[in-house]
Length: 225
Image 1 (cartoon, one colour):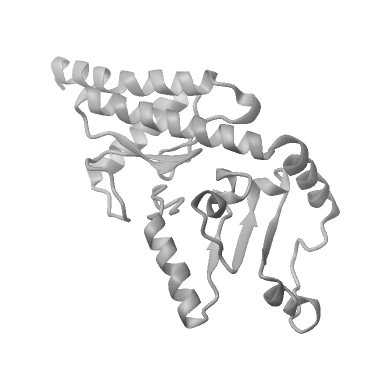
Image 2 (cartoon, rainbow, N blue to C red):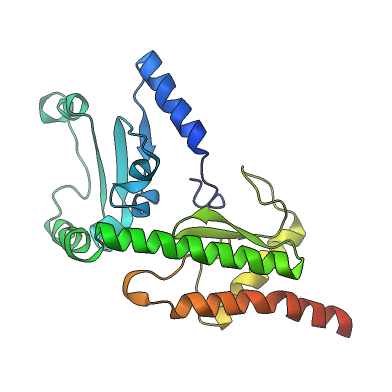
């Protein structure tokens, strides 16, 4: 998935084709799941049923501490035991490992990951329904707990250059959400539903705020400049 590029998920058929081509050519297939590993107890690869040769992980898995990891096929990982040196700034960080063990072992379980995924899917569906009902070019792309607002229809399935008008709307959207106490990444107006112990309160407030946007815009048009 393109994260900062707009939360645009790769087509499962594309990923399956990569797996087939890697098998055919002997190439090593690497999935970057730093962001998408939250999609299930086994990451997005488990949800799609596509197993790469190597996987990169990071961020929340360290329980909020500085963290990065990779793993994969036994024959590849065996190279790091004797032949390939692996130096790193955060290697052997005991505090991070302790925080990550608690985060993944006791808090963000497979059941919690599934609940978060379903909550995000439901929220995105309701937000997109609100945009369609209002007849405005506002919608969200993403998967599970990751989503980004776009001010165009149809919704994009690949990177694009936003127009100045879209950039302006995205900035207004960010500050409007911020005024409601809902924070998303400013660089793309991103919105991530609250998960785990956050409850459904922030989700309901976000839905309500998004529904207000078309009405407020129409009222401003009626008032004129």
